[in-house]
Figure 1 (tube, rainbow over the protein chains, first blue to last red):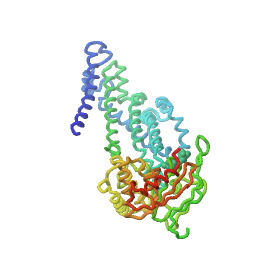
Figure 2 (figure 1 turned 60 degrees about the vertical axis):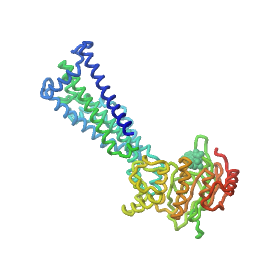
Figure 3 (figure 1 turned 180 degrees about the vertical axis):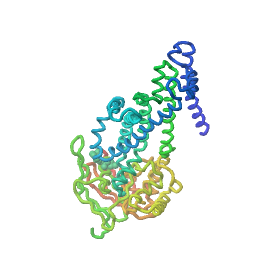
Figure 4 (figure 1 turned 30 degrees about the horizontal axis):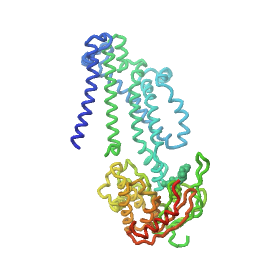
Amino acid sequence: MYNEKTRSVGMKVFLNVSGLLMFFGIWELVVALGLISEKKLVAPSAIFMTFIDKLTNVVPDGNTIIVHTLTSLELVLIGFVLSCLIGVPLGLLMGFFKPANRFFTPIFEIIRPIPPLAWIPIVIVVLGIGIQAEAFIIFVAAFVPCVINSYTGIQATSKTLLDVAKTAGASKTQLFFKVGIPSALPMVFTGIKISFGSAWATLVAAEMIASTVGLGFMIQQGRNAVRPDIVLLGMSVIGLIGAALTGLLSILEKKALPWRNLK
Amino acid sequence: MAGTGCKIKLESVSKSFDDKIGRTAVLDEISLNVYENEFLVILGPGQCGKTVLLNIIADMEQADSGTITFDPQSSGQTGFVFQRYALFNWKNVLKNVELPLKFKGAEKEQRQNTAMKYIEMVGLKGFEKAYPSQLSGGMKQRVGIARAYASGNDIILMDEPFGALDAQTRYQMQDELLKIRSKEKKTIVFVTNNIEEAIYMGDRILLLSNKPSKVVKEYVPDLERPRKNTSSQFMELRDEITANMDLAL
Ligand SMILES: Nc1ncnc2c1ncn2[C@@H]1O[C@H](COP(=O)(O)OP(=O)(O)O)[C@@H](O)[C@H]1O
Ligand SMILES: [Mg+2]
């Protein structure tokens, strides 16, 4: 048993790594063989060199990669955390209490189809240009999946489990906190992960609101300065950090729901 | 109710549901008594309304008409054992068994002691910290039984508690339940669609018809325990009930 397990873990890692190697290998080759001009597509090795350079160099966008990254992270985290703090409780309440559902659903259904970017003009007018406006765009992008998943999750609470608690004398509040929320938690986490994905993916768009720093801004500047290496570096950092933080959320999920990964 | 040892009295309980084909009558004026400390089996074909009947007794559903009266000595609350276990996946065995007491506001220590007592009684000592997903079907239902007993109610309703188990585990659990029952007296209403199980377990058996279901017959097996399903009396009774029982729709 032990052997079989280690072998399959080894196999998994091997496939993960070889997939990545193949992706970057082909990319590197395409550029090295001149199939696509270096002026248009930069090889991974060159992006890495630009990364090393940008650790200290502030040209052409006025800041090091570290500052850009931290600024973007802060922005996304503000929008994302706010959306969880408001979206999750709202979804849970709507899914569990009929009056809350009737009250909020129409508003939510109207807001839901509006793409986050469509908010930009009005947000700039109301909140002005700055981190608040940018965070709001990210908030909107992350909010919808938070609400929907929490809502769906708590609605799927087993009627039998509610009956078990009811016959044992649980109050409506106890039913919500002790039965509804725990059974919704797996879906809530799914929502949080999707939310984070949307928040992070909206970063570049949000930073179009007259930012002067951030990964999205760096990409814009790279484009203006005809520096495809900077553009691709920005994209790579967004991709890597996005993957890393999603992984972190998955680890948190496993820690928070220990009963889900047994057997 | 005059102190006749009658725990629950159902009088003309009827229930219908609205569904696609109109209105379906499920229970048709069911009257029955449940006596103190008896093991009453309610036997009926699938879909005849057994679950609906138990749910009405447990106050999880309302009858359209008729009355249900509990012995005034009794709290009117019941422990319930569900066919599909109905355990809280995110709680370990101990927490699952404690839960009814928790909702009743019992102190932590008293809760734990009671829960441990019944966990031990159903043979799950050592599994207090396990989660339901780590248990077999038989063990899950042991948790279900422990939870019902730990609720402290003197009436326990069991809805096809062994219906989801394989035959071997089912026989084992039947014996286990009879053992538990001999250790601690409770009034048990046990629902099944299995004739042999009914004869093996019941002090008294009420046979229900297909829906709209009525009580069609009462049997009091005059068989010594432990009953043997190979004894001639057992088989005679089985044949008689078989002849009177509707086929499931
Ligand atoms: N909530 C409900 N709505 C509509 N029909 C129901 C409902 N609950 C039960 N029924 C119907 O009542 C009948 C009896 O169901 P049930 O009590 O579950 O049967 P069983 O004897 O197998 O436990 C079934 O035909 C079912 O369709
Ligand atoms: Mg049933």
